[in-house]
Image (cartoon, rainbow, N blue to C red; front, side):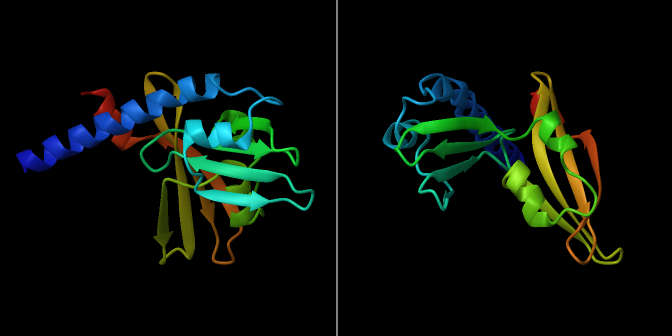
Length: 167
């Protein structure tokens, strides 16, 4: 048990260190100037690449389930970065509305930290970890009906984040 706790602590520390590098990576990139090659040099290979009809590309860099951010970087048809956005913030959470599909919610927030089915209720829950400030970790959860439509959303304290904060 002690070895498991040590392993969890070391893993958490490494993940925190890696997520701490993101602001430095972001600072090295400039909209309209940085190229896709420069973005990949700083962030590595994206988890997904979506090619748009106009030839632009959208690169997703989720930091879930252990991190507190999801980055979406847009590369224009000219090969230069046109936008770098952190998706997990209050404005995006407010855009989640009843009746939206899971795909629409994922487009707003990126990859979730966890998926929890609730079969007896005929619901499922997607949750994203985020930090409203430097000292708190919370979960933004979206509940879907059996047809995959948003029923409601909620914000709660992140139990995993509370353990890390107490270290």
